[in-house]
Image (tube, rainbow, N blue to C red; front, side, top):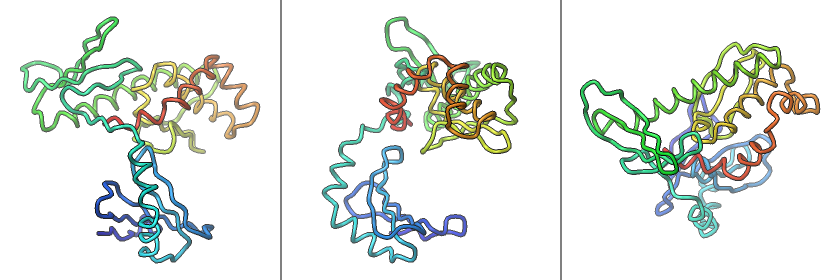
Length: 246
């Protein structure tokens, strides 16, 4: 079964191989001279990069010839943690158990009970079938709130102003800065410790002054976020793990 390319994604196709349990993304790249294969940890998908006009059947055969390698890589990925009753997810770096409690008159859709030295609780009210979506909406709103505060703080220190701040589910980067001054962040930063979210905010704010990763850029980040090395180390060691939640 294959999803054919659309006008919006003419160089992308997706197929399912029987028994694999993961989608296979076929990406045509203008500079590709041979077929390459990798497993995306963030999307839990098999990605085949092929030369332009390569027949998708060739790409599928390429995956089939390397199926044991692909399965081994997929099996090595951390288990997914869906937003389900009883699941434990991090919130600002601390473990919290999700609790779906059903309808409660006058209760907020989502509330948090912190437990010092233990696992906190995220209480989600309302119909259970819509609880995962309500939890995701709440997490995105919390991420936006924390990022608004962090961006404002660092922007004042750097002497710049962000034109717009948005929160999305970005798979390939934690944040980005456009040439127009708009900043975009991954909502999953709300799962990380607060100093990690703070660093990513500082990083993108610094791009409002320096649209590069040269020495002046890093000096600017360090000046406004002295703990940047610890945050970078945390993201390198644990950042990809955040993509298994939800």
